[in-house]
Image 1 (spheres, rainbow, N blue to C red):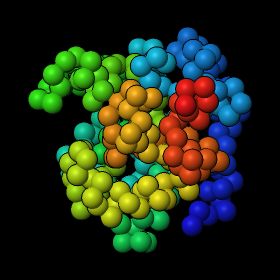
Image 2 (cartoon, helix red, strand yellow; image 1 turned 45 degrees about the vertical axis):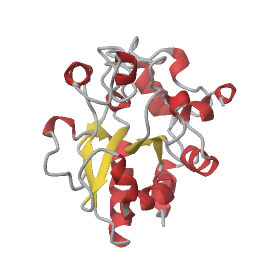
Image 3 (spheres, rainbow, N blue to C red; image 1 turned 30 degrees about the vertical axis):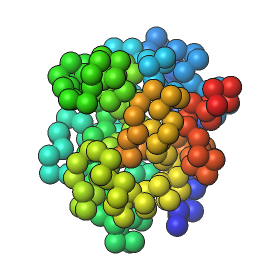
Length: 228
């Protein structure tokens, strides 16, 4: 159950945070006006809405959660608000005997660029196919500081085998209560541009997360209904 405090904190993304993100002196040209929905202030990042090379989110912190043993210490941070919510999500899961493990949060543009160039997946027969597995630099939600890859003590690989775990079932049922959504759901590849990633959760805040998960839609469909 979400605490009263959590409801107060996460019921919406505050206008102050939106203003600071768009108008910060170091980021004035980092986020295009059409990337943030003006009504609910949710950042959209995908291949058509890229972040600039210089974009660095404000207020990055390392969430107080357990990370998987192989986690890169350079990618453990999240936006402060998202980090607090992630901590509550992990705590709630543990009360249901689900031991979640964080894997990868904020990544710099340069870090994503290296991943993109180094990624070699035998399933990717073309560059276009590869792009559905690994985001191009600037197109990764990880650069926003609002996404975290999550696994569990049951399963430690970033692949679809995670869907067979109790942890994934719990996440799918409960992540929205803490402002998170399964960002790249199965069967929505033509909309998100990426293959199904059951481990990738994105913080959007309440009530958006509840509406997205209960309606079984993507962030693109939620922010741009015409793309349904």
